[in-house]
Each structure stands twice: as C-alpha cells, then as structure tokens.
Length: 130
Image 1 (tube, rainbow, N blue to C red):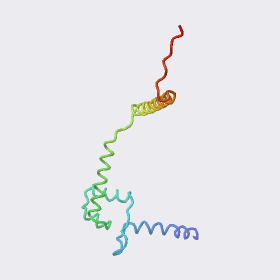
Image 2 (cartoon, helix red, strand yellow; image 1 turned 60 degrees about the vertical axis):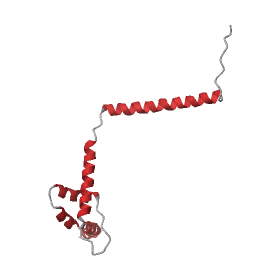
Image 3 (cartoon, rainbow, N blue to C red; image 1 turned 60 degrees about the horizontal axis):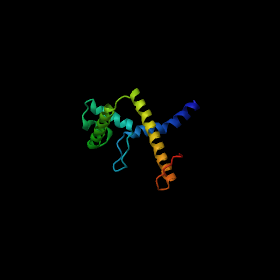
Image 4 (cartoon, rainbow, N blue to C red; image 1 turned 180 degrees about the vertical axis):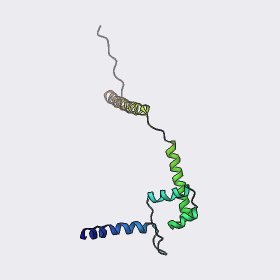
C-alpha cells in the first residue's frame, strides 16, 4: 500500500503537467507551447475534416496559428515526398566524389611543391652528356 502511494506521488506531477498542456490558459497568462506531437495531432484532426474553428477552440489557439501549423506540415510532407530513395548508384557517387577530392588535393600539393622547388623560376634545362 505504501508502495502505491509513493508511485502516485511521483507520477502525479507528470500527469498534472500533461493534463495542463492543452488546457486553456488563465486569462493573460503566458502562452503555452505545444510539442511537435501535439501540433501534428491537431493538424491530423484538420486533415480528417474537422472544422478549423472547433479544433482551435479545443486547443485554445488562434485559427491563424492552427492554419500555420497545417501549412508547415503540408510543406514538410511535400518535401518528404520529393526525396528519392537511396540506391547503389548513390553509394558509388559518394565513393567517386571522395576519390576526386583526394586526387584534387594531391594535385594541389604537388603544384605547391613544384612552385617551392622552382623558387619562382622555371627549372633549368638539362644538357645532354654527349
């Protein structure tokens, strides 16, 4: 019995916070923040056909804010649909780009070394030993 009391006492603040999260704020209090999960749930209600005003009233947010959440969710969904799935060609491209970077870096280092050896002047021509 004592064990259950201690569980309820520890769990009570968490439940109370969750219960208050959607409750209307007392007049003039600071505006509540909504988690991404709660915003998505609200947008889902809108996409299922519930009236905007009703959902806004239930969550105690303005219709404009709720519309903004819906618009942002739709833009993100559209961007997600534009992404293509990765395949073996993508891995090959990454490998080749890395190789190109290595070769470019090696060329730049060789050019610097040549410039240092020349000392600002071209290398002297060799004469034949004949």
